[in-house]
Image (cartoon, rainbow, N blue to C red; front, side, top):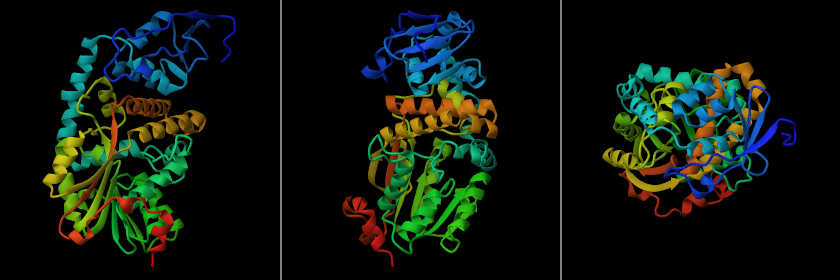
Length: 423
């Protein structure tokens, strides 16, 4: 972006007159950005190289955009009525601290809380749940491959440091989960909502367990099944196109990674009861999922997510997870909040989507591409601002105290030591 081209002019920066409670001091500082108009003119705001550029029609249109409610703005972005180049997460942070009409925001927040999309999440049937899962995950495996790591892991990575690659951080996350569950050679392991199969194949190869995964997504099932065949894991890994509630058998360890957000708060009691039914006494469950802090409530952005990204989805509070897990008979052993890690993960996905825009647009419609781009950028901003958390909750089913972990030391043994225990 050449700041010395004819047509550039520098204007005063928009700053929030009423910063939100969630905004940090860093986020309230004016950031440099640019706006490009349809007539070829440009405006610069702030000092220094712009972090992002908003492309829209006129100055008055730009001023309306930054004061519009989140739902309406997201819909306009999805339709391509304006665009953002550069750091989209920084643009979301910028938008989040702008003053806007509380009345307009309250209207869409009420729709999110009491509208049809919320009622549907309350009374969701199994058939509807399957449709909602396929709406999100069955876009195209080739589309998801443009921004996920080679294992197609679509959940929060676990970074050793901010410079680590997404691929390395996702592998580190898989190991972290397996170590938390203390997977032992020969154990029966279930991954509820197994995605594209990254965890079940890793657990079988690196920890010697017999893995089973279930998913409602046809695209995920096909990809995971292909991975099992290509890795010659047919005797040790099984993939089922099934609702988790229909799973049978008894397992030593269970993981649920990025799945329970789809369940809905009203069905969490059934969810944990089902996990308890599938787990043997003395077994462990790791529930890895997004939660919402107590102070955060439904807003206009919630309505957009439910209608265009995750239909039927609903976020619980951590206290709900603990309360309902205990009601199902579990004992909570450990809770770890990976919020900063999910912010880094979402930022990596956004960069990959932007870098691979042309390929993405060969796989999905432009509106779908822009929806995913905005949803992931908004998620990154929400994790950075503390409006979303990612909690790993380790649960124990009482019944064999000899199997209950006595300390946390076992979680941090070297991977080589764990592999050496394989027969």
